[in-house]
Structures are given as C-alpha cells and as structure tokens.
Length: 97
Image (tube, rainbow, N blue to C red; front, side, top):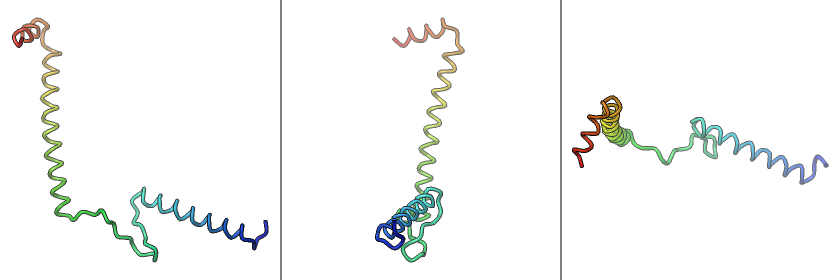
C-alpha cells in the first residue's frame, strides 16, 4: 500500500470516524455531556423542566406506595394461610363457597 494513495487516505478517514462514533457512544452511556459539531455542549431535547419533573416523581412515588401497600396486604394473607392450622383454613374456604 502506498502511503499517499487514496486507499490510505480513506482508511484514515474511516478509522477517525469509527473512533468518533465509539467515543460518543461511551460518553453517552456513562452520562458525560455530549458536544455539538463546534465543540460546545449539545442541548438535550428530552430534558424536563424541574417543576414538571418533581410532579412526575411525586405521581410515581404515590403509585409505587400504593403498589407496596397492596403487596403488603397480599403477603399478610399468605403468611396467615401458611401459619394457620389446616382445619381453620379449610373451614374458611368452605364458608366462602
């Protein structure tokens, strides 16, 4: 391969582009700020304003708290079934029929 030929130049361009893509992917994966074409910080398009984000987090917190309450109730019933004598459990099941 000649050092000044078009194949060598194209190989250098391809290697630099692959390096740029890999670097950007690693930076994005680990949360580093990305740069735009001129080296400045790139604006994120999916950013949520702080008041809306706080409201969304509060709604999610309420939803998760309700889910935990339901799961605790179910666990309590399962513990009662597991620890109660079989005769009492059988009587309660027959009473429900």
